[in-house]
Image (cartoon, rainbow, N blue to C red; front, top):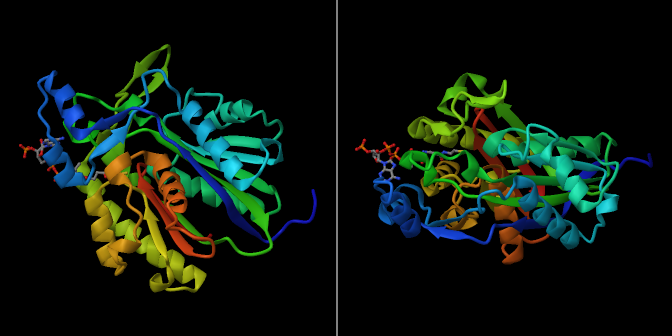
Length: 328
Ligand SMILES: CC(C)(COP(=O)(O)OP(=O)(O)OC[C@H]1O[C@@H](n2cnc3c(N)ncnc32)[C@H](O)[C@@H]1OP(=O)(O)O)[C@@H](O)C(=O)NCCC(=O)NCCS
């Protein structure tokens, strides 16, 4: 292996959404056929969500992830053969094994890169990005593909109006390269497994059948309170570690679960809402895909610029959370 460089830097981003847009009105009309009552007004008032993108039944996470990865590689001007590490964050893998990362690797025509999945639910992307940064800084990799991808619609109980209206499908990816100038400035990951029960999909396939509950279940109010508390603490921790202040951060890109969570968080941190990238209105909650989807969108529409400080944050099942401070 050639001389290791001391830092890692994001050199390209990409994302992919399945083509089918489902508005709140369309979802409410569909649910009404099953005698389940909801409305655009309830969903928009409580969550800020107006629509979500849903994969057709049978479309797998690897398909969305591969397209997002191709776009990130093209943006970076990096050939798939140069990648020596693929980390994919998902809670909706195609299979128990092989990992979805290996399936994406095969789709891209890459051979030889280390490839594995990370399971940290809606914190998955910040967990994966931090892991890739550690590999690069340790000299174990030079060019990593870090992907967050979900077909979350596959684990939703479409008869449970308290959860099914909240989520969507999608994928986002970044290319992370060894660099002699700092890109990832600081990162903090944390978890509290004693809170596993407030957000879980506690079923599995064993002995030839599904055992346990195969659908996502959530104590919405407990998740809401935890999310605001830990994201606030984590944001303060990571900027302190980097020796900067919250006022120095150009863009806050938290996990997109609920507009009210984002608003409370911004207020607690004293960050103006104009500096928060918000996609939950159009994407809904895409779990591990939400942060890289939002980052890619904000780069493409010209908000996030080279040289700016961006604070990426994840929070979700486990209970897990984390923050990564990035100089773009
Ligand atoms: C889920 C969430 C929107 C629910 O909002 P809430 O204000 O806590 O609402 P509640 O669960 O107390 O429910 C209030 C009422 O609305 C009803 N309701 C729930 N979902 C509904 C829907 N989609 N449409 C209409 N009514 C609904 C409930 O049945 C309840 O009715 P009741 O008072 O007659 O019993 C909110 O708790 C939340 O966003 N939590 C965080 C969830 C999250 O972000 N999870 C992912 C983190 S990674």
